[in-house]
Length: 310
Length: 180
Image (cartoon, rainbow over all chains, first blue to last red; front, side):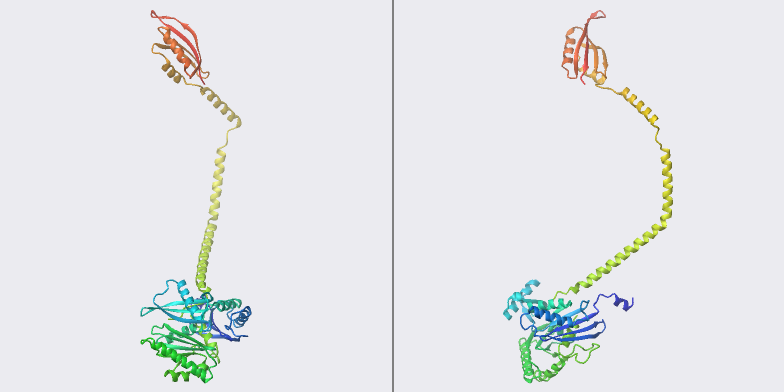
């Protein structure tokens, strides 16, 4: 049987798409889902009429989001396509819990996450949507990766996706898609990944087994100002030092940078001085065919990383 | 270790199993259709032979029908009459003579004996003659017969006193009916 016949009868989707929903903008990258190579088929970006995720969602917000999603989904709407949706790390927060004993079942683990994030955010536990997974044990402690998001916004996004005719394969935080996208390259050694997204930044630190050990997310201002760049570099430096000093065996051999190319360029110099090590920029479009100018700007790199999610 | 969390329940995970099941169903139905078509073709090939066989069986059935014709109505009526007459001749009613004798044997006193018995089974009439050296055993027999539920209308017709071999004896001639 020739490869063409194999492909013809395959049940895999022919299109992959990544959608990045930011506070003020929404972006979709559509890839041809060939097994050997990926080719960009379309990139759509739309500005939101008002800030998303700022207050509680309303019907008008939902309708507006559905309209935006509809406008960017011509290539994969109502189709059998692998669609991954990235939400800001400020909407879906992540943490790593070190537990003496892991809760026995999924419900108990989710209840633990609700309690933990409810305390942290001073929110009722039932207002949170939680998800997590076991990362194994280290020195007698169970490592449990947990995430939580505002249930109202999570439901609003899912309803808007449904109204736009989009059936998502996954919905997760931006940091999760970035880490998974670069996973095979970056987890060979202990390291850190700083992601720069519009309005916020995210720092992930992982150990020698490739397990995430610390997550930090902060809102930010325009990075073009020297003060903001210095402020981010300060906090990143402090966070890494605190992580290293918590345990003598911890190391950060490589420091990676991801996000908008222009913003990475602005921050790299400051970070190099602070960390005394050159930051390694990561680009999701490496090896992708059909990329054009601007593919490394704004939310596009994040949408591309989401589209490459496996 | 990749981050495997997800905030939606992906319906697409069911796509591959569903498609696989549908493919199996398609293959199964195709195989069944192919088998039916082949079977139909084989039957079509056998059709002329089956028709010939059917015709042969039909012809043989006609011969059997012809040879097994019913007798005529007159012959049937004659046969019925003969059977009725035979049945009437053979028909018995009431108690058999053997059973009657057995019953009389139990009732007859040791000093008496039966001289004759005439039994008409269809009507149930019995005429018997009992003998004894003196009248007492015969009176006792008469009494037993009257009390016996098997009999009715027990009647002493005559009392005789014949002389046999120089010895005097008494005879009771009794008529009775066997209760139907």
